[in-house]
Length: 213
Image 1 (spheres, rainbow, N blue to C red):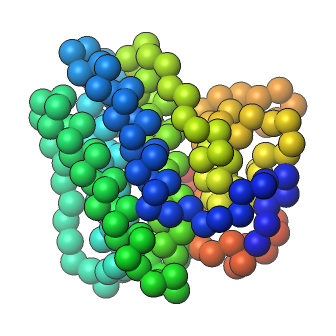
Image 2 (image 1 turned 120 degrees about the vertical axis):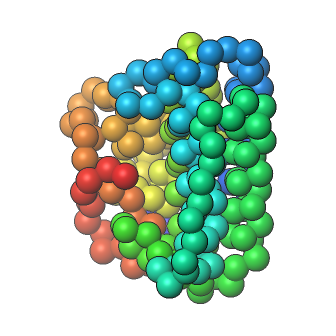
């Protein structure tokens, strides 16, 4: 399914997860000596706990893709680990998910509270976590974070097709706005948001909403 105004129509895949993780890795590597116990603005997290959260989420997505609701796993990442170990954990978790996404048959359906994602959906959710929380961490560190705009557009189209960027719009700002991170002129604040992780051909064409996760 095409999203209005989006040229990119290829599914989000493991390469996109790796690209999102690499953008986070580059930013974090430059700040390994910084204080990661500082709070992230507007969130009840520190830099360390956000990094651990994203790593754990990528691992959970790998499990949820292959095992769904019937799997019996527990996943934990130690937020109090050294910065280098946390960064290694983040990149390793993203690589594991990328490999799992690319190895899964296209009709694989996993488990998530927002729906039943296919591999494309899990990849897009992981990219959203990496990119949006990457920006959270950058704000906490006083750093800049500017991911690839085509990747941001693809993630926005896949998870928020009703918010797909139109020609001339900045897909990265739209993705941050859709996740409730920033205000945009002429658009209402997204304090409540909900992904569409199921295949796009199951989208009913309406704008979705719900409680953030």
